[in-house]
Image 1 (cartoon, rainbow, N blue to C red):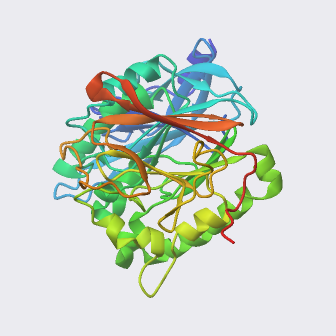
Image 2 (cartoon, rainbow, N blue to C red):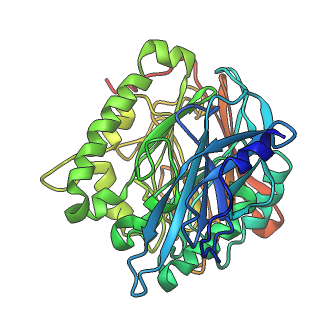
Length: 426
């Protein structure tokens, strides 16, 4: 009865031609808090309203939002309407069902689970980058694991669809439909990659809803014992376009990491995990970006190097993509290895650990490695796959899933610390 009144209150259906008003490309993300969930979807006509119905077992509650017209930069100037509704103050550790739409059409029913409250929970994430709508080898494995309740969030570390703007943004539509079974179920947290650059990164900024705002390319959020940080490495490589934003991001990142590293905050939430698309370190034979070292050493004559910030604020693990392979470093700073000990290199490590995980699968296939592995490289594989993270107060555990071997775990490492904070090199 409550829902019936809600829709009747919208008034009788207007005489409005709306042939493409059915919601699609539904995905969710965390809002400003873990129990704020942002629902995002697309229509191809203006529905003159954006609504969600939701509840713990039945669709008993309603929330309204807004839509934004997105005009793609291609020749056809295609128009899409991106809708957003935020569900605020949900109950922790609770499963909700929901659907989205308008008086002209509602989606099928989806569900998501709000994580438990507090900082002592286990957080489970899937991490990967560089997944296209063609050759997406990891997608079926990710979907199966997500549907079994294996993940609390997804971290997609740049490069979507290959490319979202192609065919006047129709490739972007196809990709968003492909990931809907995962992204409608688990918060899909992202950062931009180089393949999003077209038309001022407009497809990326329009389609995804991150905690920093509807068009933010850098942001952070807290979940359990982890402070997650997402940045855009692309400002370093599209400097003429992104100079102002690079300075803004750098100042923001300094403030964000300073706050996260305060003793009281580190006591509550000990781990800091940062993600960005282009890696500081890699040993691939087609490498260009790691050799340029813009993110590691800064832009010539300008600076703004990121690596000292990782050291100063005790960032524990840095996750990258861009190279279509997986590579794990030893604890590493300024090209030097700082293992905790010979037998336990990741116990009380003396530097951040770098993980490159860009092998989810796309039409550009594998990135090959140099024949000689550098001293800092602990493990590497060219096989398609994705990374799992299990974060607890006492440890971070990472493992790499090889989907070419049917989901076999081919690598794993555990970061354990007695003390969190800046690394010292006296």
